[in-house]
Length: 305
Image (cartoon, rainbow, N blue to C red):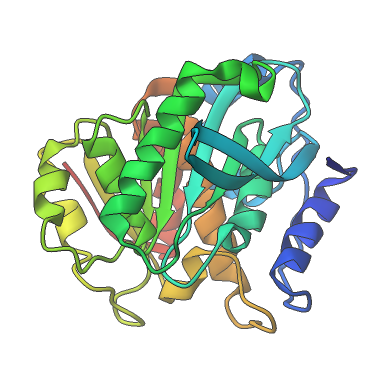
């Protein structure tokens, strides 16, 4: 188990996992010093919601446990990296699902950042060429496995508050998992894409809240992204990050210098969304935190129903 002794090193180690030399914008640490995770939730709900707060690292150190093997059945295992916040309370869990051609390393920095805000995180490795409907059913089994066996993480996870996050085709996996009844509070879709003919069927079955955080459509447009907002019956919201490309919704690749700001905007939006679901099981808190970014033009094309 690798202990990350400072929030700065959290981001640095996550970057090294991807291959080393990409540069990130400097990220400061919040001055908030809650006595517990529950106290942090109370503090956040007592102050005005603001996305800029979550651009900073949170108040907790993070322990990373790489290559955890989740044995879903005698014949099925899934490899994952676990990011535990340093407090001793039970806390929500975020499960990150990568997209096509990527891996759990593609969300290492995002997971470390979110965990610094007290929410434990798990990044999964599933077949990165799909099939994505199959990956979604596996993701549902992972969530249900964790919910039914909380002792596997030393009872640190509040199994009633599991949030699924998926990038690109990983958004299909999240969609299918939720539609299959995964024990999850809701999903965050990062510039999702799909070539699955049956996707609308799964989207119509979802009852949990969904938030889509997309790239700027004037920069890049993913296949069938509109489906993820169009077909859920209720509880769906969507925003886009001004100027961002599809790749900005995951950790930056090596030597990718131009999208630092977009990467930070995505990870702050993920953090606000996850905490919103954890605190209220809705995205209202996150949406309120976006208002300043709407005004500044950092987040655009906002809609919800």
